[in-house]
Length: 275
Image 1 (spheres, one colour):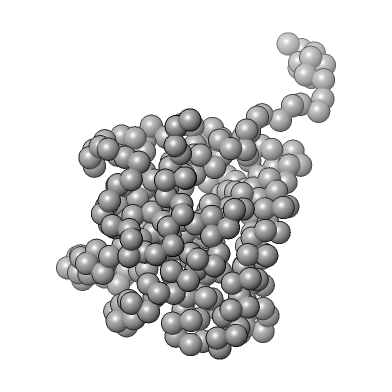
Image 2 (cartoon, rainbow, N blue to C red):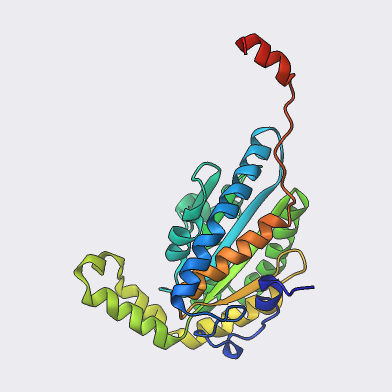
């Protein structure tokens, strides 16, 4: 059996073991990857439309793409280049930033649950519930006992989603500090990209090692059989986009999606049209 990209990119427990500029599962160069990603488009769009049609006729299955990574790792790029290959109908994108006062009054998963995709929907989390065990741990926004509780809570939460008909695809977009410095500098050098730069990104960068350690714990504690992590080397944007596109395609293929059968007499409806 041919090894899937999903199996190739899962199983990592330490980010230090991953070269951010490697291209596992892909032997070509940039132009080849751009062509390969474009070639995935028609099937991705077809399968996503089938999922949407299934949901519109009462189906409860959905797909959730979780994108995590350090600043400049390319979450927005994946949404544009990969999710952009499918119809916006049936796609729901949620971004999680600093919680509001209302959100802080609830358990950390409360705001996440509000954004879970309904049946037939491809949901995308631009950052996610993992912020609460990454920033929470590094910035000491919660005590150690609470952080420990959250790992188990996340696993239970994801299990419930899967048991209810969801498929979760978790992608950790891995870059090196050198990759990030190059991308931050590119934003500063280009006036059209100044809006993308936040001085706070450099503050977080100074805690690089602490974040890498926090990500390692996340990989060890929350990569499960029902919701494994996929570490996607993202130092090369073209590989990152192809890899996430391929992973999403594999996830959709695994649903064996078909077009819903009509719940009415097709011939009778044609007769009514006078055809």
